[in-house]
Length: 597
Image (cartoon, rainbow, N blue to C red; front, side, top):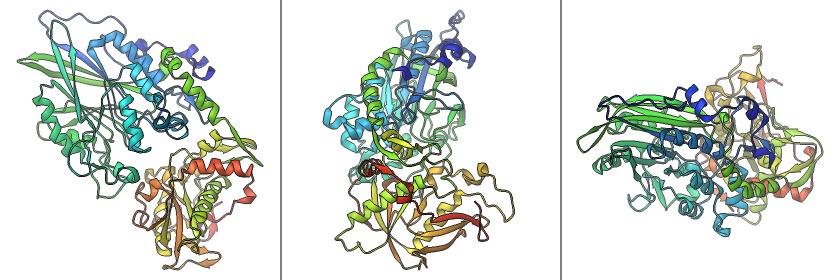
C-alpha cells in the first residue's frame, strides 16, 4: 500500500513532531521541560483538538488514487494526527493531555461512503474505520457534526456505540421534549501529581442546520436548539459538578452567519457562545473548515477572555491548547491559556493506524477503481463554473431521466422535467477511455439523494437569479478574468446551481437580481404560471444554500435514490459515455446580449 507509507517529500523534508511544535512556538516541545520555580504550585494541562475529519483516516486521495497532496503540500488523516498526538503526550505526560474532536467525522471520503452505503456497518456489523482509528488513538470526547446525520439515525447510533469516547451533542434533543438525545457533556479527571486532580468539563454542541440538511432523517425525531441558550443551561451544571476548566467543543463556525433563513438558531455561533455565556475557558470549534490557531473573545458579562481555536479540516492541523492553573480552595483557577495549530505534514503516518485501517482502505481502493464505462473523449469540470460543460450535463441527464421515469403513471408525468446541479469540483475528469467509480465519485462528491419538486416559471427565474449572484458584475467592454469572474462575495462553487431543460442567458453586466434573460422552454418564453418538475438534490431541497421557493415546493418524487449511485448505474448500463448523447448548450454568460465566451 505505497500510498500510505511515508512519501519521498516527507522523508527528505519532514521533521519530528517535537521540532514542529517548537517551531510553532509551543513551550516545552523541544524536549526538556523547564523546572518549576520554588513555591510554584502551578500546573499546565494540554488539550488537543481536531475537527471536520470527514472520513480521512490515511493520507490518501481516493479520487486520484494517490497520496494526498495540494499546492500547500498539506497532509491529511488520522494516521498523521496520531503521530502528533503521541509526541505531545510523550512530551507533556499522558495524564496532562486530553484529545477532543468537534465533529463531521463519518462522511466525506469514499472510505466513509463505502461503510455507510456499499457495505453499511448496520448490515455487516463491522466496526467503522473512523471508530477503529479514533479508538486506537484514544480520543477523550467527540462532538456530533451535522454530517454525522447524513446516513440516518440507525447508522449514527451504531457508530456511537462503536466509539470508546463519549459522543456529545447537548443541543440535539428529542422532538417531543427537551431531553438530550445524546450525552451533553463529560467531565474528565486529570491527575497532575502529588495526589492532585484537575477536572475538565467538556460540553458538546452540534449544528442546528441538521434540521434542514437532514430533514428526511431527523424530522419528528430530533430538534436542534440554540447553541447560546444550550451552553447557558449546561455550563453552570459543569461548574456545579466541580469542573476547574470548562471547554466547549462546538460544530459551528465563529462568524455569526447562517447559510439558511432565520427560522433556525444561528449556524456559526461559536464566538456568540464565548461572548454571551459566562464560565467558559475555551471553545474548540469546527464546521467552517478554517484554520484559526488562536482567537480571544471577550465575554460581555464577566470581561474574561475566552480562547477559541479551529484546526482546519481533514486532519491537516491539530489544535494544541495550553492552560496554566494554580490551586485554589477546593479546586483550580486558570491563570493563562494559549493555542497553536500544528501541521500534519511535519510527521510520518503512525504505522499502527496505517496497519489497523489497511484492510478497509484496500477494500475501498479496489471498489473505487472498478471500471464501469468507457468515455469517447476526455470530459472535464475545469470550466464548469462559467461554461455549460458536457460533464455536468451527464449529471443533469441522469437526474432528469430518473425523475421523469419515476413520474410515469402519476398526475405529474406530463409536466416538463428540469434538473439542477452545481460544479462541486474543478478538477474532476472523465478520462478518454476507462472511467472508474472513483472518476464518477470525484465528479459527484456528496452523498445526496434525488427529489423532484414542482416550481412555476416565476419561481424558476427567481431561483436562477439567486444562483447568478455567484458572478462578479462586469460592465460591457471590461476585461474578463476567469480568476475573478466567479465566487462573488465568497459564494462557493457548490452554491452555483445550473439548470437544464430550459435555455437562458446570464447577463453579468447587470446587478444581482436582474441577470436572467431569454428564459425559454423549447424555444418559447417561459411564463410566470407555467409549471415544471425540477430534479434537485436533498441538500438543496431541504434549504441548503438558502435558494428561494425550493423548500416549500411540492415534492412529487422522492425514492431515496442516491445521485452518485445513479450516475454509476447509468455509466454501467450504457457502457459508453458520449457527450453527443446528453450535452445540450442551454445557458451562457452574456453582456448586453454578446456572449462572454
